[in-house]
Length: 107
Image 1: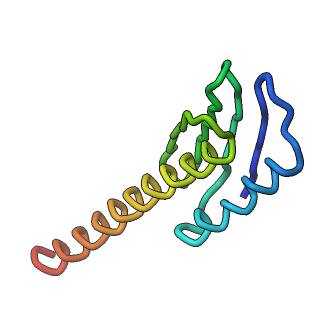
Image 2 (image 1 turned 90 degrees about the vertical axis):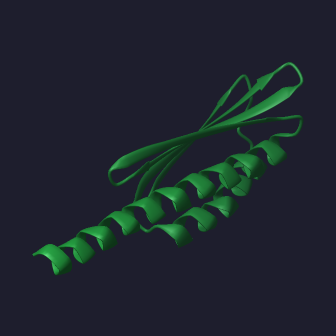
């Protein structure tokens, strides 16, 4: 999986990079077919924003989090991406199960 981490009006420190990399395990445990992840960290006055775009086979998932602390923003971002990825996986699995069931009944 390719990971791109960038910052707008903020320097991406090794500590921030390590924090993002430590959260990647939650995504890769759910789905091994993740193509890439793009994370953009930005600061706007007192708001710390983390935006993430996750490219998986057949879909693109996007989430953003706006908090007072950058580390909390990253955590909330990954929580949202995990929820979206879990929902996407359930939809894909359900679609395949329905196709197999229909094939058995009508095929």
